[in-house]
Image (cartoon, rainbow, N blue to C red; front, side):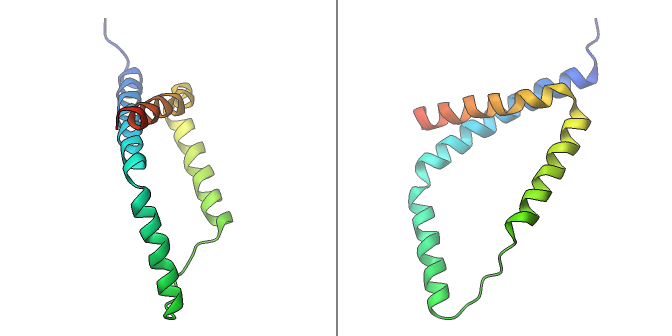
Length: 97
């Protein structure tokens, strides 16, 4: 029996999303100091007069929604299970990291 390529791609995608969530969970647990240093750096940059260009929230949201719709139509129904596996990996990363 030969499995369809979309099934194999879906399984590989789920495994990769789980691993991504796991690594991100470990990084989130270890990255609090980095976030604080970034905020301090931005405050110092503003204090000495450097301007930092920011993208508007609506531009970012539109881009994220377009990517989501594109991937959902390309991959299929299994796309909606991806956040579940990412959250499981993220939780394990926080717990074991």
